Length: 391
Image (cartoon, rainbow, N blue to C red; front, side):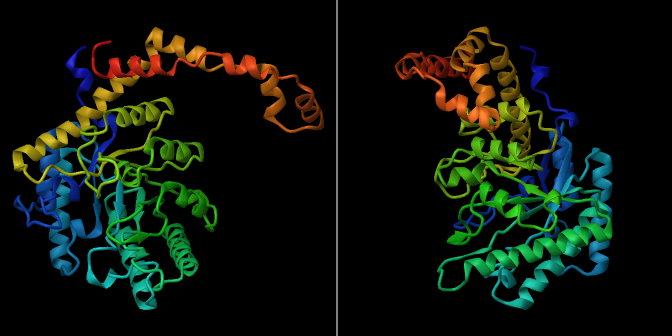
């Protein structure tokens, strides 16, 4: 197979965050192991890796929270130059509502009305910043929207407060003509003991209660559902079915561990494959954002390899997905497994008085149905062989 099949190009719409490639190797138990980079230097590093489409940022990844207007202007000028020389776009922006001590008890769901108002104010400013650089997707991750003790917050009131904030920001988006689509990002836990809207399905239900549900979708992250021991592919499929997959975060994760943010495809080969296949089969056109970071042991050179590897892993799995879809033995088994019956499908597709009577009168042969073969072991082994390169 030619190697250029695995070479990324901007057409793949791969993106990285300033906080991902720029991660200095800090963790809760250790100080940074790499020197910090300026936003412009991070963009240059992504450019060196080659093939990326864009770079995304939280407001304070780009502009420190206490920066003066003059300092902010200088940073934006350097950042814009770096984007131009590396031919990178800014497709997505977001707000940091979790690092500063003011958000110690949440942002939109804080018990303090002044903090809630400040969180909306900060998000409005951040939306302005993203719009300056052409961002059209706005991700919202409620990093500290939760509790350690349910004695501290009314969860129904918290949902109401979150809804009011999102409704306000949707109307602000319309008023200013930014043209954003909002993508809500779920996470089951960390850094709070319990986080509201723990999984993607939580947000899919919440969106339908908003004033402008058409403006709001989801941004599922691979690691987050895996932290809770769930099947990420199924959650993405639900978002696709609801036409709400506005953005996606790719990384990897050992099941049921803390949020590790490993390089995409570095641990969960099989689930990464089926996710890639799902995005291909459903013709997902949005950006594929690598919300991950290099190992703490990596130096600056190895961080470049992390970025290259993230994109290459997706391209390798993409090629495997196409091979799966064109493998005659695999497709033959799928045809055996997926049995159509036009008569019964017509009966159950739409309820009518006639379909009700016909279905109740239908004579099902339960034993014959149970005896039909389902060669799942054979299919799963063929999938394994394909992924391991022996097929």
